Image (cartoon, rainbow, N blue to C red; front, side, top):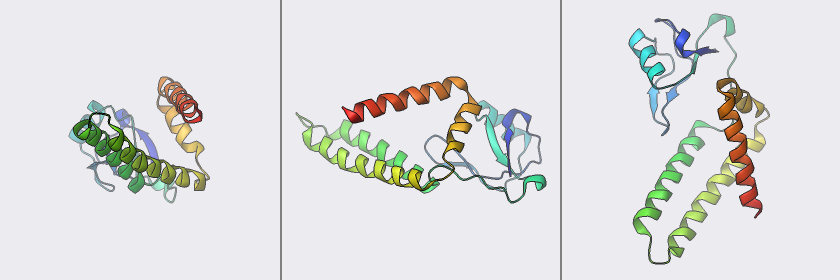
Length: 152
């Protein structure tokens, strides 16, 4: 399998990996043969790269920095937590915030556990850098701010 620029895809290419939306729902399934309409939709959704099946790169399987299951769980937990905080906030908000803290702390621990076990973590940085220098710089800055808040 290889990474291909979405704008350069041709009808008949077969997806090497599922394509997910920002909420973790599958848009297109692995193995699907792409049509021009599908390619146009991917481009309109600003999906810059996809993995496609390619006989020259058979056996090469990229490993994501965290599992798809954990990624979906984290996104779902964060969305649910913020909705709960918005809808159930009492006068001082303390109980809701304590509940959220427990859930989010566990998600962070799970993510950190998978990251520590991933020997190919630099792939994530390479993917971000390949996509866009601005996104890479922004992600780096967010990381710095997050670590500073964590330390504080």
